[in-house]
Amino acid sequence: QVQLVESGGGLVQPGGSLRLSCAASKTLDYYGIGWFRQAPGKEREGVSCISHSGENLDYADSVKDRFTISRDNAKNTVYLQMNRLKPEDAATYYCAAQNSAFGSRFPTEYHYWGQGTQVTVSS
Image (cartoon, rainbow, N blue to C red):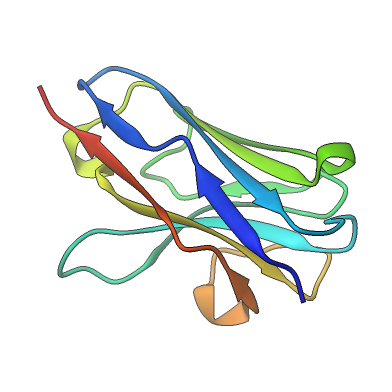
């Protein structure tokens, strides 16, 4: 098993930036990692994912060219850099790990989840 802890959320104005971190309790070398978000009354959405090596990345169309996922396996940490934030990006953001090296944006394919970090985008 792996425990995940997200951090870096907060309140930001539209157009601002945040960097979310997902710290793991053990090595992430063999896990695909995804970032997901869920706003009140909405389904959980796959925002981005990264393969175990960091070579394969994927983004939802709604965040492409604004968000960047990366990982530092030496630190057992995955990041989500979020730029040009919009009010519709506001949600609770979760990171998740799957017992597969490839990563995906489908939440049902993930086995381990963090508790989430809140992102609020408002002026």
